[in-house]
Length: 494
Image: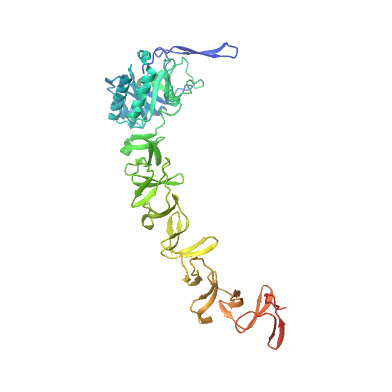
């Protein structure tokens, strides 16, 4: 860049008012020569190039990358009548070397209209060179002829115009004693230039800004020429994120920290979903514990939407999450593409549907199998429906009632046996041996078959069931002997 006249003395003043030490800032033509990779220096995260570096090759940029330089900022334009003749080669070769590539414009405007025109000129060239709306676009403000012509207001106009042209990531380059109000630009998007005579990694300047250009006299082994170098505090020009042209992938992809990205990213005012960097259209997506839908333009939808014939609601508060419940066609691989949602979440449990209960696991209908809910046991058949009545399952009889409650309750079940008129007593699906209370008294069963006259032993006591199978009470004569079974409904022999 063309930074000149940056001759400052920065003094650290003690509490007594005396200068504790002083650091001199060199003229851009007199800064010391440094080499990329040299120890004890501020980081060389970003290099900026212009026409005087000429046709830098892919190998040149690879050498820079090997030296630890991550980003390249290419001068594209100046005023409204100059385009860097080497810009296309520099941009394409830096991309081919796998570096993050940004752009800058050298400003000359002295009015709001001129600022707007320069921004448009910059934007036109940038789009023509393949820059996307998420790439960093920097306004280089250092011409002193602009100061007397409302440089601050005009620079804001320039920045706003870039935004209106679709560029969401904009920055401002200037130097520390340039006379302008920079408040329209966040500090993390300001690129500040100042060159110390003795640059040191233990004495960093301008850390309140996004990036600091600390030398204009850097060399890279294996590459001809000298370069401006910057330490990138915020990652604004060295962290490779956003919509990028990725040669190895054969097109434009969303990149996050240099990797093809899968997931949502906010872009152009809404969320888009990317799969390995590719924008995903007309599809469902799960993120942050919610479900979302991206339309044919890739944008996450809001409000009431009709999708695959269904009326669904995604809210109107900028959160984009599905709120709807029910059997929703989300093109899953099961249930013909349908799954059960509850307030936008895949549901596990019973839901009443089409006249009966169905069991879902992560929204997928489950067919034949036992289910536990509300402290009871249930069974769904091979169509997913909860069963009622007496059912034979895996060779065992179960009673699920006939009152639309569907739970398994055991009891006297007709299984077509040759005894007890075809009924036997089941407990948890198994033929039961022991006492069961039934029709106002206790009966004794052996393998589910009611036993009539005979002695029984249970709970450490002795009992007797009569010819009808009922446990007796009171004083009874059995086989010519008298026995007392009590009269308090306990039935055991005293």
